[in-house]
Amino acid sequence: HYEASSYYVALASAGHDTTSATAAGGVLALIQNPKEWSKLQRDPALVGPAVDEMIRWVSPVKHFFRTATDDYVLRGREIKAGQHLLMSYPSANRDEEVFEDPHRFDVGRTPNDHVTFGGGGVHYCLGASLARAEIRATMREIVEQLPGIHLVGEPERLTSDFVNGIKRMQVAW
Image (cartoon, rainbow, N blue to C red):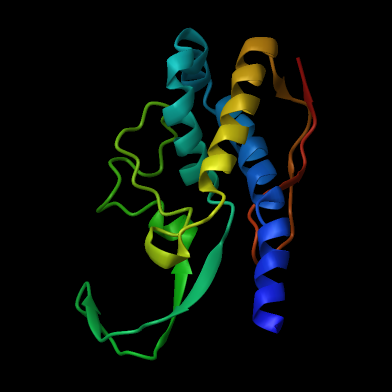
């Protein structure tokens, strides 16, 4: 009973903080990268790849813990079945073996094999499609309606061990 009710609580509450964190962080990334902002304004078809880049860039969930089910060797390191592992999303989403120029925000990045939604398998985020749709809709409106958006002061980061986001960001247009 506890396991089932926990699942439904997670299902009902997950995604609010992470989706808003990605939208706010995506706007901040566009403001801080004016060439990418201009690219997106000139070519609204880039909104799809731009959203995945925002998701990769922000990495709204900082980490999850997993337990290895099998023995495995990763980059020369032996992992034993039963060992507890930390999945660090910001680190994985800046992996130089996966992403060309991983520390650059690029609205046209393709492919974009970020692992923000869990990387696949049974742990893949159930709300990934909804999150992408919500962020796409938000970004289309911001790009169209607020072409002169800019910061008014420094953004205040969220203090959290789990969610990477912005608590307060004042903008004007």
